[in-house]
Image 1 (cartoon, rainbow, N blue to C red):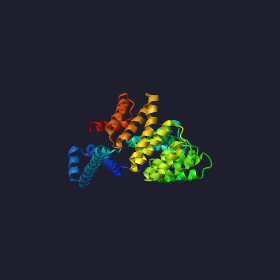
Image 2: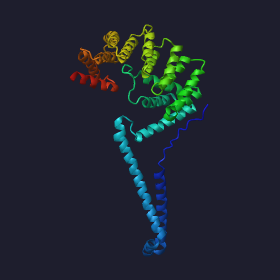
Image 3: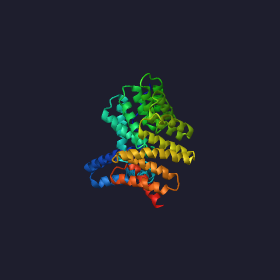
Image 4: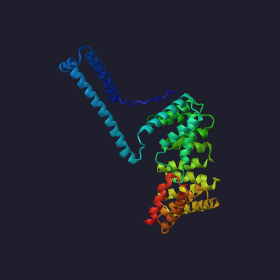
Length: 369
């Protein structure tokens, strides 16, 4: 379909390499000349020749200049590294150090194996972990999602990486590179459009891959998933979130309402009520928002009581309390205390996810405030 993506690294420190190479070459030449002169004429005449010879003086000056350029280049590299570490990373960017270089090289090796169709199951999982970290660097998932969208993303990477379809593997390699990501997503979209089997699955994989990158393609893909698999509750939930991203709140509400009654899972119903509450809040319909949150609270309470050891159920309950508190009504502080109590218990038991530490601190501050 297309030529294989070039996985080579084009970033070459050419100035440093050239200066070091010339420096070594000229020092070697000068050393050989000095040794030969010492051997044939002795120290005194060699010293005199060096002082009186303009070419030798120029050569020494060139060597000194190259040494200065090399030193300057190394210092500049270090300065850039320090700047990125203490300033860029302070804003949340990943460190740009040896470990990241090795990880990038590992990613390139794995993507080349994908392109060649020779990636093992373990390597596919390694690639999925690296790629998922790139796609979800700051935990962009919804508060009740609890890692589900990133897990879906990861599974789709593994499935396509291990696929027998060469065109789909090529597209995945393009998606992994930010500069060719749109091209890769578009290729997968064209493949899904022309597919004759596993239509819901192919659209779902594209929807999950596009979700953190391309709202439009992910929206179209989830619409297709629902077309071929209308009972897929989470396709409705993710599609509603994408509509919210595009500020299409009526469409988001309609999508959730369509799947609410048909959803057999109590936890999924709780999630849907939570999402409907968020939409009502965004529409400034606070009475409706409270009604949705309380409907979700009934289910979340029942699930948490049915299995007190289930961290997911406890977390869901905490976030419903937090949503009620955010409505800013008279019982807000009471709701914050309930949310904080659950999150604190999870934290003390070592079961609170790192991404939820911010929620724990925020709930504590709201109680103190």
